[in-house]
Structure formats: C-alpha cells, structure tokens
Length: 331
Image 1 (tube, rainbow, N blue to C red):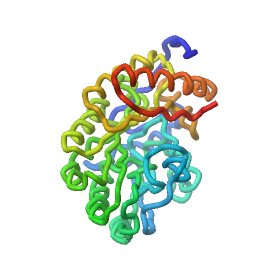
Image 2: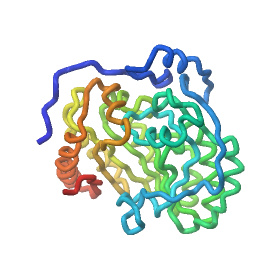
Image 3: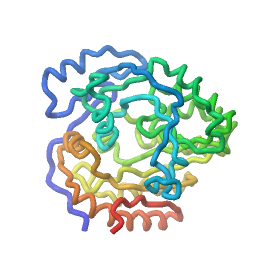
C-alpha cells in the first residue's frame, strides 16, 4: 500500500534566477557558484563553458521501443540529437547528472557543481549542425533531446537551426521539452506537422512541490499551454506525466494530484499520454531529499511504481483518455 504522509519537516526553496545551492554544499562552493556572471540568456550561479562536438550530432539512443532494440519507451526510432552538457532546469529527479559526472566532470571542471549549476555548449555548434548529413535520417524519428532540454534559453536558437536544416530533409522529430520557448517555433513546425510531435513533461500540478523538485522550470499551466497551442495548429502533441512521486509531506496525495492533471488533459485531448513513477537513478534521490527535506527509499519506489500504474489507468478511464504507464518493475 502507498504510505501515509509523514510529519512536517524542512523543505528547501530555490528562486528561479538564483544559484542552486543544495544543503550539504560547502560555503566555498556556494561562494564560487554565486560569483559566476549572468546575462539575459544565462542563469545566475550557473557555470557556463564550451567543448567540441563532432558531427553528426545525431547518435544512437535506447529511448525507443523494444522492437527497435530499446527500453520500451516510444520516444524515437532509436536516435537522439544532443548538443549540450548539463541543464539549467535543475530538476532533482533527473538521472543525467550521474552520466556527465562519470565521463565529463573532471575534464570540463564541474565536478564540484550541483546539478543545474553547469551548462556547456559546443564552441563549434554551428559547424556541427551544418556538418550533419540530415538526409541520412530522412523518415527516421529522432528525439530532440534526451540529455538536456532543447529549449533552454542558451540552446533555443540552435534547436531552431536544427529544425530549419533537418525538416526539409525529411527528418522526423519527437521534441521533448519543459520550456514554453518551443511555442516560438510552432509556426515553423506547423509547416512540417506530419514530421513532428511535440511532447512536454509534467510531474505535478502542485506549484509549491514543483518549485522544490524542478526549480527553474515553467509552471505546469505554462506547459499545458504548449500542448494547447500545438493542437490548435494541428501539430501532434502529447505529455509524459513524470516522474510521479510517492506521497510526500509537501504533496501528500499523488492520486488527487494526477487526477487534477487528467481533468485538464481531458479538455485538451493530447494525442498521446505516458506516465512514469520516480525511479532511482544516480544521485537523484539524494538531490530530491535535499530539496524536499524528506528521504525516499528505492524499495518504496518499487512498490509505488506497481501500485500507481493501476491507479494511472483508472484515472485515464475516468476521463475517457487513453495512455500508457511505463512500469519499470514488471514482476
């Protein structure tokens, strides 16, 4: 059974523009993170840097169906276009930080930076985009993107360049974003609507909880607007309701939370709906505990994953919707 809410404890709050300094970070690290300069396209307290990216920028991805050799998530046909290291959304549940730290942190110098406090963009990004043979992926669906949001302020213009070059060559895209900046590109996407699906992620409708677990992400209502505007242009649009957290003191009733979102979706009628529970990846449970003041165990997540998958299907049916729950623990 899902556990009852626990007693109230401390929670960590972050501002949308301030540095992300998690409890446990040293004073010297905090001082260093706040010394980074900021501009209109940069978040204060974020370490910005560059690296070299080799063409093609499309690489193999396992975020695809099992028929395509993937993990069973229908997000591409086995391809992804990633062109940054890091992300400024600072989502505590994200697993990507552990990947970057394993392969890149020492070389690029962000090993002491909290997730959300570093972003590296290739210094040759324009050349890498131009040097990619986009026609080689004609009629193939590519995820844009799998290790960062393609519509971060620092990246949005590069995403536009990718679309302008790749869409006329027949490349199909699943654009995965939490950013309303994608709305600016909807007129372009509309011209190639048969090649693109736009997809947003929403973990919760509770604004206070959202600020704790995804401190620099637009509010849930702003992300629902993306789906509405895409649908108005007859662009395929969908949502991943993820990650769904187990009961937390800050947001005690996940069923009511997701039910509220389902009511909104019934009005919008997205083309596809996926759902997924929070999973243990890298240091994400540690970061989540720091931001919410509440620990979550991996065993607790296994039980919640199984149980909420059933609830998810019930909530879909209540609104006359169809969707799929990505259950990690199938036994």
